[in-house]
Length: 315
Image 1: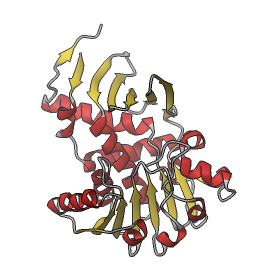
Image 2: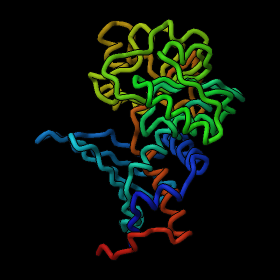
Image 3: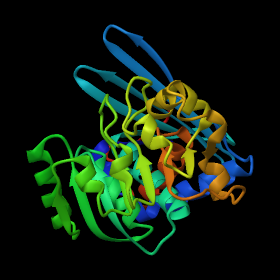
């Protein structure tokens, strides 16, 4: 039987602390050659873009595919989880919340391995749907003493700080990215910006950056000049980075970065490489994260009986 999970089912089933270990283990297994992850593909037409990404995690006996349609009306996300042994679709679920969780969890894993300290002052650039899970992801691996928030809209960043305060975080809005990053140890960027706003002067004293907003070649958050200041640049998937990650693509075009310098998170988590500080984690989102998190959601739903769409026979 296939469980049908609506978005509202997924929202209450798992926490960030539930999914970070699953994402970490997926990257560790990938570093040992035990995960097959396919880069995102896109098809376009009629003003819309269909995105698809999939991965097999044999150590779980599960595989999955996430697809989402982007248009002027917004985006809708769907994830399908399969049993690799009998090919049965285990679940079909709304994947907006899943995506926010896995992106935050990836930043958490990267912060754990690349920053690695017991406490941090965190700057967050961006105040949209993905911003809160960036805070939760970092806070799951290090004690967050302070959140310094910036986004282009003053009202949005004020409201984001109120949301963080209700969640128990000391949060302060700042009028610019440089002001927010000033005094921070860790910076997470999660915006839709077309123009880079993280410049070298923004990074004085910063030990680690999670750049999560751009997965289009014509968009960037980190400038080519800022790229030169990092001891190591780590990506979630090098093949995908070469075709999608505008921060790095633009850095290469400007002669400020070389693909041969890029490390992959799987190598770091598996202990095969040891990055130099300060570090940049460029995250575009990869399918192995979706399968790892979707698998946790499925197990929780099955155990709790919380799947309002019921269970159907897909045969």
